[in-house]
Image (cartoon, rainbow, N blue to C red; front, side, top):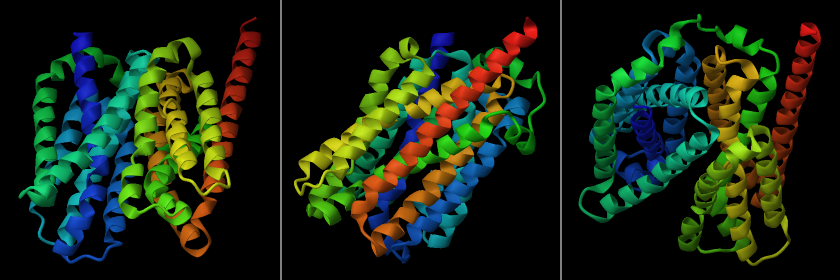
Length: 393
């Protein structure tokens, strides 16, 4: 039964990745048909992100009341319904309305599933599950591209992904008994309020670290193509393909890290990941015009990012207690979405008014803060453990 449930969670993580790159890949076709300005995609993305932050913060309360299985089912159902609504939308304002349930569904399921896996499965499964998220994020642009090439158009792309999500809803509904038997302890303790969560010792270190990691990851994902065109003189057609380098690096890295995660441990994986990121940033910063070195740079940065997100999540119960992990992971997700939403547009302003070639420096700043915050948390945890041992003796 545990293996069957794990397989269902793997499917759920693929489903989590599917919507993440759908809007960006479909927007060039959506924008003129809906009569919206080019920049309007940012408003839709921000509404989705706001809903995701809200539902992430509510995930502890919802999971304790309803259980992980039911929260996952409801969340995927909300997302599937919103994407189906996108396929029928005739006006931009309706997209904005549908973005609300879209975001609310995404946040709860992300936090609930991450906490469930952190509590019940080994570190390698966390890495591989996030690898499957990468597969979902890689597949959806191809689905959208195939629909745009044929007669279905962008509406067909959203329809296809929504049907996949509804199929997963059926699987989740049939599997509710499995989740129920495994999550009876979730309602044992009262949910933490946000102020209580923020007062946990060392929690601010990991929240800032997660914010910095997400800012680094999202900037690399969203601005890679523009970096190649503006800084290296690559054509837009080639740059569009090179934009997938980070996804390839992070997906491959999570596959590999799953094999070594239990041997190395979460803290060491994070250190190794940051060092690899530093090597990738150094490649980007080399003053050479040929873009082959930059290709290697984005691949290496993606590979270095691969173990960090899963390792931070998986270490949360050990760092803050299993009884607090759902609340902490919910706030971690919220900080991650804030970093993902606001930092790439801020870099866009820097690129517009200064120089996009400053990207290596921008990424390096977040990498340094990420490393410092995770090390401070490790030091605080060791100090707390020593004090506990002294008290016992």
